Image (cartoon, rainbow over all chains, first blue to last red; front, side, top):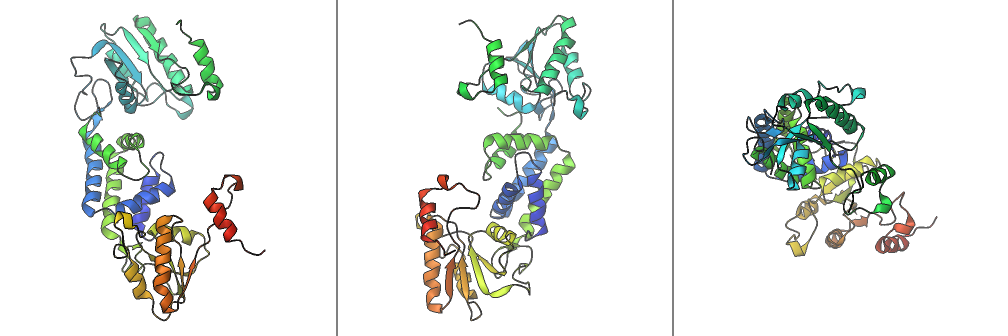
Length: 197
Length: 197
């Protein structure tokens, strides 16, 4: 029994978000009830504003509030290389490394035939359309799971006839992890991908 | 670098909520960007509506959308006993046990002299005002920490001259827990509070 329908509605909406269970949802609702009406209204407004303003970049399909995102419109990026990722959040993750100066392409998903997600459901056509003569390498940085693997193989095969080099990011033991606790599949990939010192 | 100021604002607002770190905040913002505008608008509206509609019950101070909450206005509750808790969420937790049929009183906090939270800052006066001849017992169900303990002692001393019985909920090993991993303080309380079988 929740004390009010309007609290119950908010709890259900919070609980529908990823990583938030019913207990946390209840805590968040009660937290907002302790904030000023102005604070809650500002939060609500930002959500609506974000959803209304943000769109996909015309080129790389990442989230942006302009026609073309900051990376695609930057003069400083290397246009001969495109890093393909599944989600806009992956772009931020790679940018944080400060190791990459090329462009991106966001697929908004990965191939998953069991869930009916084929090449038409993700932004693969848009990627192929970008592959004019200037692109020399595609780095596939998809999630290290079955869907990511299927998508990686699919795209690599697709671009092979175009004479573009396909690479993939290394799979191995994560930095800071304990070798003893690494799973078999990760260790197998780490051995397979060993490099000369 | 976040791709849009409006996303950054939402991430910051999510991260200001309890239990949500920056990583989860980012994930929630991106999740909402994948929902329809109508869904996001409905979520925003519910937040504002909840904050506008919900108030404290005139009697027990829990959150409700009426002058008097469902429990305080129910004919079926035992009016001779009041369970004192820190937060509205604690009322829900105790209600879920289906073991309690009395009334509640929500303090909206606990005494914490270091943080400047004295008796005037929480709803202690309102509790005392409820103690007419009909109340025979007060159950103190505050959090098992220093603040809860101080508040428990304070209220017990306050109501003693009124001839009202003060009780507290048992402190001991939680059901399902492993005795081996219980902390010393909990075990000490469990021993102290042992009952005859």
